[in-house]
Image 1 (cartoon, rainbow, N blue to C red):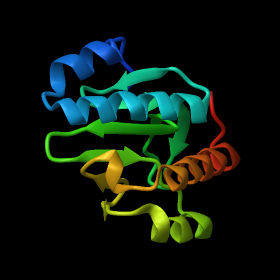
Image 2: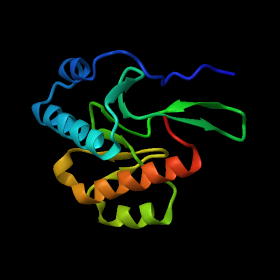
Image 3: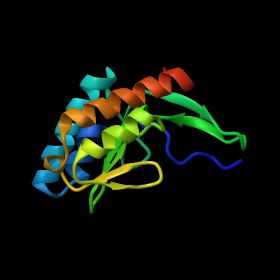
Image 4: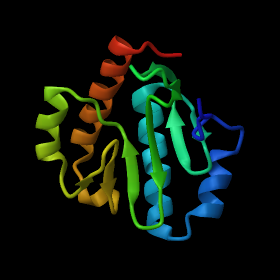
Amino acid sequence: MAKNKTTSTEVSVREFIDSYVDNDQKKADSLRLMELMQEWSGFEPRMWGPTIIGFGRYHYKYASGHEGDAPILGFSPRKAEFSLYILSPTDESKKLLDELGKFKMGKACIYIKKLSDINLSILHKLCLESITYIRENHGTE
């Protein structure tokens, strides 16, 4: 079985943002997302792999046998856009997406250009829905 690439690291989140994010608006949005996700999740930010800022931890196991740990909430300030790792497969999450604002969907994440493109109260609700789903289906640490 292949080793997971995305694991928790000891790299400083603030140092990562300062060195990786080269756009002032993206840096400000990164710091704001970090603050919000920490408040909403109750967990300190940690680096997961080289570019994901995650909050909390849960263990997953797929029917295929693949298993590992992942952050409960997370984001990555990628060069082109933010990747938000907050989605749960619930009917409520699907409804909330209609009100989120300007975004694109990926297989496992939501892509946004900047925080001002989305409704932060809806983002908050999506994050809480994701936390609830993970706690009910996977447990958390």
